[in-house]
Image (tube, rainbow, N blue to C red; front, side, top):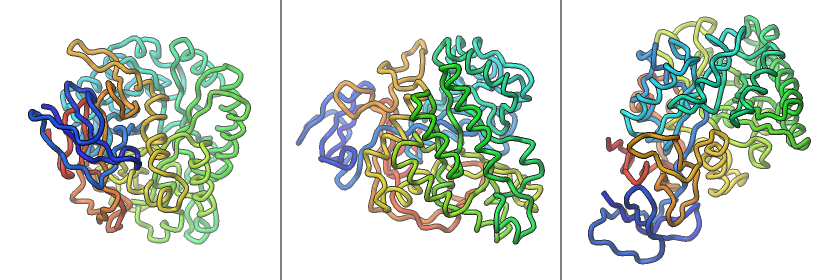
Length: 441
């Protein structure tokens, strides 16, 4: 099916028409006509390249009670995403070619977004021996990002070897920065609120110490380091220093760390328990400024669904993590656009263009019938480019209702929040996966 999108504001700028045919943008301009195409009137809507998430937990295989590739893909498409990178902490762990290829296949069968598997750095994410990095890179999944997310690669020798190994195929190690000896028993950010509540603290230095070490290792190995879910002001400064040295260091921030603070823990509601924890208002401001000035490269959701029994319990026993795919764009609009720190082109850069580049998903080719690497994401909205895009209504206001979200889990920290902007349509290779806010496939 062909689509003629009329009067969309490209990156929040000039209105143009776009004709989508055979998976690419075949025409752009004013007052386009096509008698065979479906027409979508997009006046008042903003067109961005399809969003790309570098940090999604889909739970399949192993915890299909919390999420599946299909349900997570639905949430992603509704959130404006056309590609998501699936974290390896499944059961079994995605530390072999067989498991990453299974995740890839499940994503292909669903067909709502491209699902790019991330491989584990170490066998079983136990931090003892490197996993089959080269085999996963050479597999059908063509893995380029490796992470033990949820666990830090704490051994500096092992981290060095991983960085050296992935350099051969332009891979990247995505580190969960947490010195485990400093966070044993930790329940929330270490600070005034943790003292008031009597909860064991997770100190900022536990994150910053690992980032400092790994930035130095990235410089030493001349390899690519990506820092997951940065949460402290000190971390921002360390990453800024590494970039100033010219080392290949990139970083992400999560929407919840741009908006929420450790004050939320006063409710003792485990929905606010996350790793790394919610920090202080000063940290939130530093993260926003770091994202605005490019020190932090991308926004990543760390979408972490959990079954009810894992969150609806006392704080100490609850699993850390929050839903993020359907609310991420709105949170970025509230914290970055409405505050004047970013414009829509800046949002496209941090939620589509740069994450696609880091993940190796921005090649010009399209996935053919015989397979091939996932590509065509984070590309310009221009003639001949893959038709991966999202249309956003910037004037919309909506109230988050956990029961209405596409995820199988309900652990959103934004229940009852009124948020700005909403995805109206999402297109994957010219196919409408979302129209009028509803999944189409």
